Image 1 (tube, protein in one colour):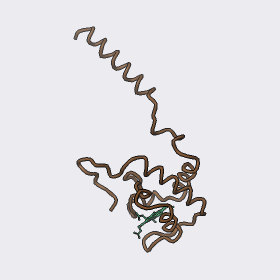
Image 2 (cartoon, rainbow, N blue to C red; image 1 turned 60 degrees about the vertical axis):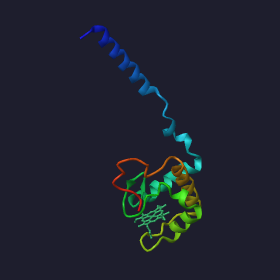
Image 3 (cartoon, protein in one colour; image 1 turned 135 degrees about the vertical axis):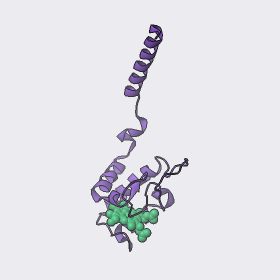
Amino acid sequence: MNRRLVGLIGAGWLLFSIWVYTAPLENNRPDHLSAAAVRGKLVWERSGCISCHQLYGLGGFLGPDLTQLMDRTGPNYLKTMVQLGSQLMPKQDLEESEIEDLSHYLTAVSSSGRWPGKRWPPPRFSAK
Ligand code: HEC
């Protein structure tokens, strides 16, 4: 094969690799979450909500996907659900402040994108 062409492809690959490894990951930077939201994320993880609920379609499937929860409802609804539970969801033993942090986290999740997205084919699993 033409050596100049191989050199060109090699240089292109090298530049592309450098770009991939050094491009800033805007959306993955933890400082995009407020301190309250970070605390809320820890509450979310500690409490095991993910064993029954999904964020962006990932998690357990006993309860609904909560990605857009805070768009659809609000902090009061979250608080009621967590404190009282329902016939299907066991109530969760959390402090007021923890639930408040949780609502900051879920608000950040809600505003980070949409799930399910409008794409084709549609995802196999979706909320309700
Ligand atoms: C044992 C499984 C389980 C766990 C653990 C669990 N949930 Fe649930 N959750 C459910 C189920 C099932 C429902 C649906 C309840 C219903 O329709 O009555 C639900 C419903 C909800 C709803 C209402 C959703 C909506 O769209 O109306 C919220 C909010 C919620 N859960 C928050 C949480 C949070 C926050 C945690 C963690 C602190 C949590 N859940 C942990 C099973 C669970």
